[in-house]
Length: 271
Image 1 (cartoon, rainbow, N blue to C red):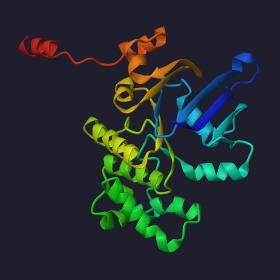
Image 2: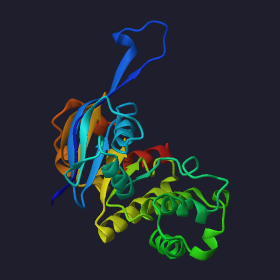
Image 3: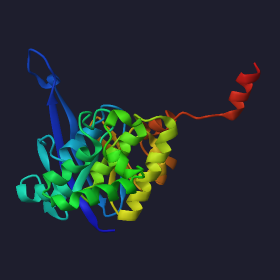
Image 4: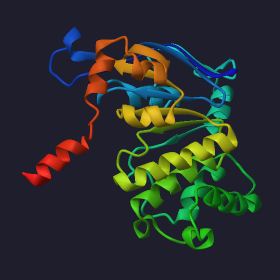
């Protein structure tokens, strides 16, 4: 598979609040991170809270400025080229963690999904058709009725489908999914991951899947990066890394995955 995105030496330092400035008042949230993403690949970036996963997503989208590093999309650098960056922002979209905070509660579903089309100057007469097709794609039915609803009229799973539709409506080539199922009920998580899997295969979209959950990484991703304190500890094929971890931190994350033992449940029930 050919490369669609490359990150080289990405670094971001944040300052801590305090009266005095010293080295201890600064933390490197992302520390010299480099990786590539192939066309149609699902790359998981996994690690504990505070490891720098979401900061990498924000840096790629240039929601925040990096201290140093380069990002290439289709072989063209985007950070120092406004024209390349504008094209990239249409081609790279984000699905956020919280379906309650990531969509405007005062806007109807039509307006929420229409906003990216308006920003990227899609012809007005084409928008409704695109929006309806996208709602069908994310399995929000009946689409015509959904368009007229407000977010509070939908369940958490339906709201996340709206967020997914908003990300898909510009026909992106890359989607960054930042913990897209962690705020959902357990019963809904599998449905959303299965939907993303179907969409990825149908549209050949490259995914960066940000998560702390190695179990969903194994189900969803092709390749994985293990992140700690802004540094990549380990990377490789997801099955290889999770079956035979080389780094003790990866092993610690694996050991933290809850294990359900039916024998123990039976003992507890009969005690």
